[in-house]
Length: 92
Image (cartoon, rainbow, N blue to C red; front, side, top):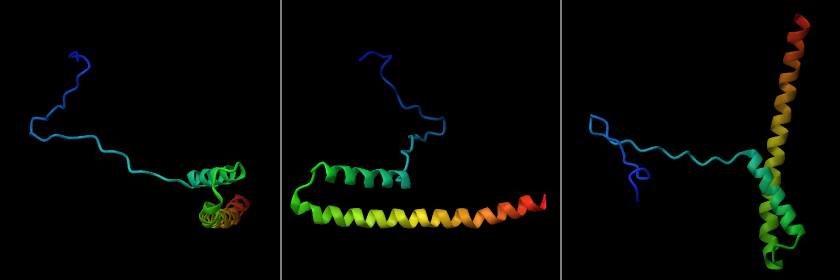
């Protein structure tokens, strides 16, 4: 390798070596929605064996129920915030 492509760790004057920290893995609700869609499309296209369908269906049902509860909480939060915004606008 040439000297240009090699990288060396730099050591600060105090003698400690710092390494970049990896980002913590993140799984968002949008990712879970995508997984639900992937499972649905895969099952429609026959990607799973018959014996696997029970397990896949169980996971899909749990995921779907979770996402529906998240959606319901978000909707309730929006409705709770909406009257507060309306009252603030009426006072203006």
